[in-house]
Amino acid sequence: ARRAAAPAEAPAVSALSAASAAPPAAAPAARDVETRALRAARAVEGLPSASASGARTAASRQFDALTGEREAAADGSADAPVEAKGSSQPPSLPPAPRGGDSAQPPASPKRGFLKVFNDPQRNRSFWRYTLGYAVFDFGFELYMVGLPFLISSLTKNSLREHHDRRLENAQAVNALIRTNRSITRIAHWGAQAISYLTAPLISRKSGEESQPWLTRSMFVRAAVLAAVPLLFFGSGAVSLPVAIGLMAVVFAAQSFFQGITVTKQGSAEARLMGDPSVSEGERTTANTILYSFIPNAMAIIAPAFAGHMAMMKDIFKKSGSGSGVIFAIYSGAVALCGLIWAGVRIFAGQRSSKLAPDATGPPAAQRPKLRDDAKDLWRSMRDGVKLFWRSKFLRMMVLGALVSDLFSDPLTFNVLPEYAERIIRSHAALGHVLQLPVLGWFLTGLTSTPMGYFSFMVVLSSIGAIIGAALMKPARRLMTRLGFMTEESVLGPFFALSVVEAPLFWLMMRSHSMVAILMLYGLQSLVTAFGSLTESGIYQKTLDGYSSPDQNKIIAAESFVGVIAAMLSTFAYGFLLTGISLQASMAIAAAAIALQTIISLATPYVAFTKAQRRRT
Image (tube, rainbow, N blue to C red):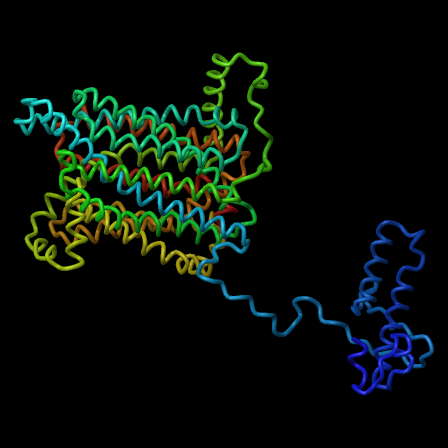
């Protein structure tokens, strides 16, 4: 640096000679170095006999002397300048600007579209996880459409192939289809309940973190789901009860490992997005992409493809062959998702527990397996219920989900599809729209699914949720300007907005216009999107505060409670309330939405302290 400061024609000499023979312009620089050396030496005079605090002060003064900064003296005055050796005048050393005192701070780099997290590894892991989630969600939406279609086609094919006379009675066939669907759904929920019961045991036995069992469960599910099209196309070899029984076993096995996936997925997402290093803005953006844009986009796209698959020609003389193809695609999507998730490195490795490690029961090697493992399962479920019940936020969240689980399954698969068919199908203008080139192909696919005209409502609901997610950042900035700085404080205003959902549902019930019904159903998703996304972020942050074993217990207990509610709901609507009118069913659904709204309004006041709710 000193050589560069010298004139260009100066000969190359040693640093020492250059210092002594420097031109007058370089003399202040030489005096600067000498002065700083003197200051540094004086700063540590008497250091061996100094106390600990004195030593720290001396070291700080020496650092300031070397860097050119002037430390304030104990009396508040600045240190006197040190006179340079051999100089009659003290050098003029203006203090160097401290960090943050610059008039124009360096501009922060622009945030790219794909940069959700500042941590590069976390950002890469998030997008890899999101890619796998998108692949899975496309297959899952196909599955939601294909499941009722599969049971209906399987029942009719088996009756025809075995020359069963019940095929001639449409009412008897429909009743048989409803019964068979109920059997498969109960098998699904029952196996998932067992899965949530055994999830803590699997976690304790394996001693592994999120990634291994998250990906293993996906691969096992893919293998099990591959048996569905095989059973469908080979159903003629066995009787209808045997075929339905085998199908129920397959769905139960898939559902058991689905419960493991859900448990590990919750823990993995808590690590990915609930970590203390993740800011609220990063978490909000990640949840918006993962829980709003991706699932709602797939809910629009996948049913249209499923509808055109439903119109496929018969394969191997099986009507409804498209349902078998749908499950083959779903199996492939689950396997591909597991393969993608296997590369999410942030899930791997040992996780440090924030709380005390799980010490439930004596070591495994000292216990008899069967009886003590059964006790451990009961103890783990009991501990999970206690854990989420002690947390006021988790308790209120589970209560709200419980109300939803009690009514969402029959509302989605029975009440609203029938309601949509009565209203939307009666509009003659729809037939002209189906003739349009691109839009017609899309709408034809929607109306050709077993979900029928309810798919229109699903599309508008998804669009409403996507709009809500797109407005999440502006809404959050508005709340910040109003003084709501934290996720806990902003949850109150967002849940207050979701109160509009109940009157919107009541208006929809009393409307006879197709356009009004679709718009009102979409608005319900829009007004609830802000609160749902904020609640998801708080849940991840809360869950990340527990140790990994406790996370598994909490997620398993929450899911188990929801499964029991769904089973009760399915049984009630499938066997006890078969003669209930559509109007009465819609009234029950409206009452459930109102109850859920009340729980949402109470959540911020019950779950958080006044200090957490305040706006600053």
